Length: 201
Image (cartoon, rainbow, N blue to C red; front, top):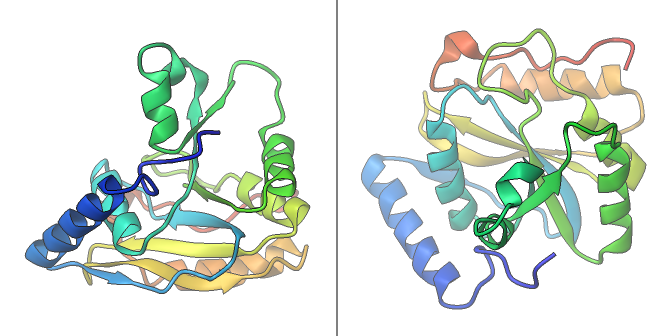
C-alpha cells in the first residue's frame, strides 16, 4: 500500500478537511464523533441506498479525520487510474477468482501496525434480504472491534456510532448492530436493507 492516502497527504488533507467542514455546515449537516483512538478497527457504514452516500461519506470522513481503506474490483486499478484509486484508499480485489477476501483482509490487519478498513455490509444500493457477513468474520479473525458508521438523512448527521467488540456469537452481536441502525434513515429509506445476516453464517 502507498505511504500516503488522500486522507494523509500533507496540505491536501488540510485543504479538503476545511472544504468538507464548510460544505457540511452550509448543507446543514453535522459530523458525530469521535472515532476510536485505536490503530486497527473495521468501519461498517449503513444504510447505503444512494450514490449521495459517497458524497456525504467522504466529507464526513475528512471532518472526523478518518484514514480508511476500502475494497474495489481490480479492474479499476488498470493504468492510468490504478495509482489514483490506490491514493483514494482502494484495495484491489479479484471478484472473478475464488479468492478468499476475508482471509486476505485478516492477514492485512495482522501484518500492519495501523490499518482501518471501511465496508458497506449491504454490498449494494438495492434492498437485499441479508447483509454480507464478511465484515464480521474479518473482525473476529483479526481480533479487532467494529466501529458503526452511519449517514442519517432524517437528522442530517453522520459519523461514529457505538464501537462493537465481537464476541464470536454473530446472532447476539447483530442484535446490537440492528438496534442502532433501526434509528437511522437512508436517502431512499424504502431501499434500506435490514441489519441481518443469514443464521447459518
